[in-house]
Amino acid sequence: MKSFKAFLKEAQNRIRTLDAADQTKFDKAIAPYVYDIKKSGRSATTVIVRSPGEERENVKKDIEKKLKAAKYDFEQSRSGGSTGSTIVEVGDHKIQITYKPISGGMSETTLNATITELAPALAFMANKKFTTVKKFYDFLLSTSDNRYGVYVNDRDAEAGKKFIMSMPSSSLFNDKMENAIAILKYLYDLNSETPIQQVFWGYRAKPDNVSATHKGDLFVKFTNGNMLGVSLKAGGEKTKEPQLNTYVNKFFDDIGFINEKNALMDKVYQSIHSKIGLPRDWDSRSKKSDSIETIEAFKNENPDEYEKMYDDMLEIIRESLINAVNKDISSTIDYIKKQILKKDDFVPLIVIKAVGKKYSQITDEDDLGAFIPQVSSIEAYKSTSSKQNWLIDLEDSSGNKITMNMSVRSNKTPPQNKIAQGFNLAIKFNGIS
Image (tube, rainbow, N blue to C red; front, top):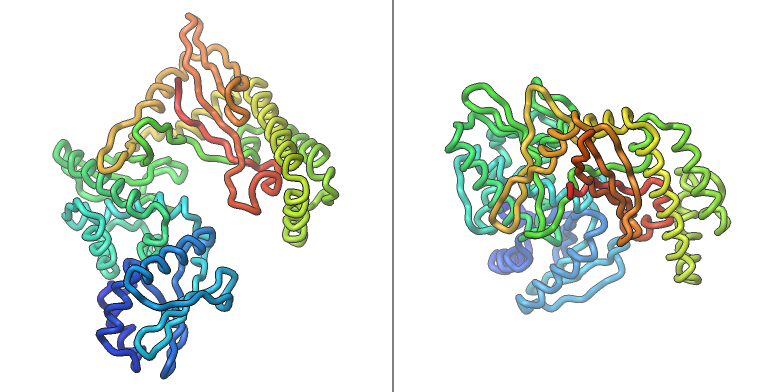
């Protein structure tokens, strides 16, 4: 991927009838967004701005706000895709900005996580320090031809380039870049204690001798040969970021209760989806689109009943999860060890949370890991204050107890959310009490 300056130079060469000063002014007006040129003629050019699918509308609004601030005349058009397009008058030239999704199904959640992971890794290995978002992002745009050893393989390197170019499309771009500044500070502080040889980005591939299931987002190799996994969280000063993100389907598979999963799927269908006329295989690839339309029509015509049905579905699923945890203590402890703690005998894990430009260490998983060998009883139960929260009490033979805060809820964007997400809702471990 080209640097921003190289990109702009290429754009100027291709829009031959556009005055160089006008070209530069336009590019600065919509910065830090970058684009691909689809076609360019004597009087008009069509460009493509890419972002996560669910963020295209927000990106369009943000770019139009920037154009207005730069005193450009523009009009909105319904052509150019489902999001529409923006047609800008630049001198005697018209530039049509179209908004397309990034290939590969990238979500904003993934993009935000990548900002806090990849950005500080590249900066640290380049021996750079930043206090402002603009200078930090300008540096990232310049890293195309220098990987600094951060990427484990070529596939992750190509993914990294796409992420970097897409970062400004995040609605939380500035917040996440400030979090990246905090994580960069953490790496330098860690280096002052034990010299670091290399920082790896654990996106898809992991470094040699690291388990593929390790929870680390970054992996730090010290000059003494030891390795440390770093799990990164970002949020508010008093917020609790989830330390497990999984789904109902995977939970039952991982804990080994397939029959219970099938029973839950059937109960959810009979209690919810069959009631609005959907076939049993409503979420199959060939029927999903029509099913979504049916669900949306039902929601629009019966909004209160729709919300009640979602609440009923949520309760059915929460009860099934609680029953599964309470069914067998050995299975539950094994699940906690393998899926939540994911301990690695050779590569320890530390959890670091960024709040603004500051960081702190989270010790919940350390406390849970230390307590697990002593557990003699387990009890899962519903929260009395929330329809989506549930808790797991772990107790030892002396009556000492810790409580795991869990939640289950829909996490998709409309119209794929709630009832349309089906039984496969998201499960999160939100720390211990």
